[in-house]
Image 1 (cartoon, rainbow, N blue to C red):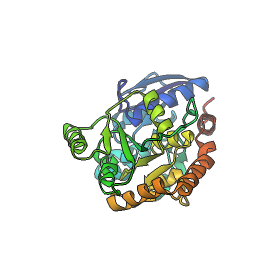
Image 2 (cartoon, rainbow, N blue to C red):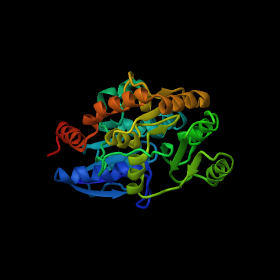
Image 3 (tube, rainbow, N blue to C red):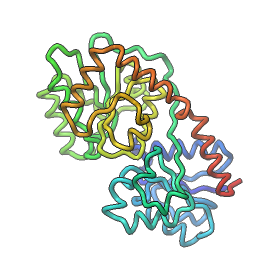
Image 4 (cartoon, helix red, strand yellow):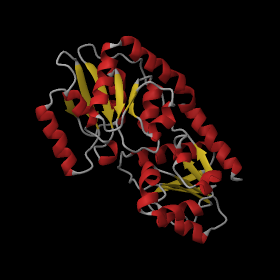
Length: 319
């Protein structure tokens, strides 16, 4: 099969949409298919299209569907599709879902957030990650917590920094934030935060291997998002065995499970500060989170993501 894989994130981007597209292209090639990755494509020469993002890829989805109405069309629902664009831009977003042969989502609570008429098309494919090259050895001088993600509104990116301001003075907490700023204002805010908050360290965008190295020395990772479609960074933390402190949104609960003990109330600085303090001061609690994380690892391994794609393609009649 010749597959056109469309993603709104360009070749140089380190955004989640690009990471997903690159990994999926590798999986589909491993399954024997030819894959062309682009930002926009009408799929004129493709036997099948996989489109990352229902709204941002709407033009490509429409063109392929119009030209090849009987060829398989798989659409990935991004977090902003699910919790944003289906409400703010319903015509384009829902039209993409109408045209889709199958709809892929990345966590198991998406079914609660989309129109029921699409549920028969919906498939959950968990994002996978490779293990760290070495065992984790958390830092000794500080209680290091990493935040990995671009600085933007959807990520509530400075919430961990704000929480770090109000932990007890005796705390050894150090927040390492990795990711580029979505706007100049976000960059300015992060720099200003560093000036007044010695616990917060924004290091900007760095290569993936350096992110993995930070996982290896961190005691926990915080994901403070107000919306997520199923963050790849959570999958990476799970495979790394790194305890996750997560906002209690569907996008996180749909990956970590409703019984996971590391949630805080979304956008609640005091609640996150309390959770950070508990993780630092209570080794048993942190160990329990780590144990729960390790139990989740099997479903985020690469062979499981590949298996899910193989099964989806078989159901679509793709050889």
